[in-house]
Amino acid sequence: MRILRIFAARMCGIALLFTFAAAHAACPPSAIASLEKPGMGVRNGVDRGVLWRIERDGRSSWLYGTIHVGRGDWVRPGPTIQKALAQSDTLALELDLRDEATAQVMGQPADPALLARMLSGERARRLERQNTEACVPPGTLSKLQPILQVTALAGLAGRADGLYPEFGVDETLAVSARNGNKPVVALESAAEQLKALTGESEAEETEQVDAALDELESGKLRGQLKELADVWARSDAARLARYPEWCDCLKTTAEQRLMKRLLDDRNPNLADGIERLHFGGKRVFAAVGALHMIGPQGLPALMAARGFTVTAVLTDAQAQTAVPMPALAAPSPAPKAVRGGKAAKGQRGQKGAPAAAAKGGRSAKAVPAAKGGKAPAKGKVRR
Image (tube, rainbow, N blue to C red):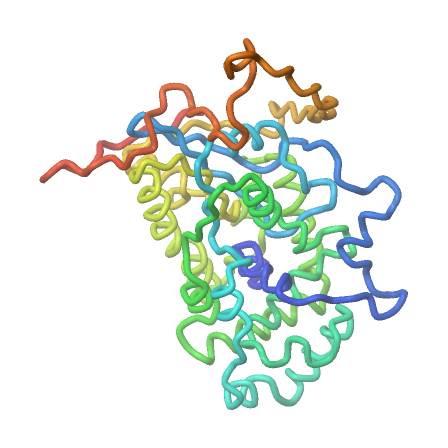
């Protein structure tokens, strides 16, 4: 299941750069139209996904394992996630797909000669059939890098099960952060992710495109994607950690090399970015694909090795309470004017004031590096 690993690692979000309208009745409804189905729609949030708190230098930051598709009723985060996000200063994503420079890199036309070599003959016909089945208008994806074309199709494979890139957790968190005037930063560049996807050679990319077409044609991708989404929605970190056992994706040396390149090789760079933001005085809410959290090279383990105390917050499917958030109360009447300009007792501060720091937190000033200082001692992981 190579394309599932690519998809889970990040890049299904390329589908967000395009609009795919339902061409006929057999096509899945659009993301917005899917909300009109009975029982669907944006509801009060329920906690989903996997979350760790990381602490160092008197501040708390967060590691949140996401999935890059979602259902309409997952759009609003649950209370635990909302609280952690509110206690942070910055939202850090693998990529910010709303960033214009990122969109330009991902949407940049591939070399025509490369497209002619890789997408010809039977491979081109197979790709055309998959575009038709996905209700993608002819020519919409045809100029993209070949691996991005099949990755975009992978991002659309879950629509029959109500899973849409438009409702991807990273995307909805970015919207929430921007609505609250919270900065959104990228931990990687689009060029770095594209390089990880294409591999070391044209032959390797061609092999990945063929494997992706196999999985799209067989329908295995849809089933695996649904299973991964269900595991994520249950906050089942134990099942997620056993992903290599059930993904059917590590049978060959080539598959093992691809998994390493897409996950383990990228994780240190992600950890560097999170540590840099935290060291600079920020309380970071780092939201990256959930597969970046597993194993000895996963982000919780890497941050503990860098001196952070790592505490599991939302990782146990059995212990998860996942209580729906209460409905929002009606707004209180505006306070009466007070003579002398003093605020009324109990009146809140100025609108837009930053959220209070986490208990024990310091101010957001950058912490200067000690001259000749030693690397931080190893942290610990709490469960």
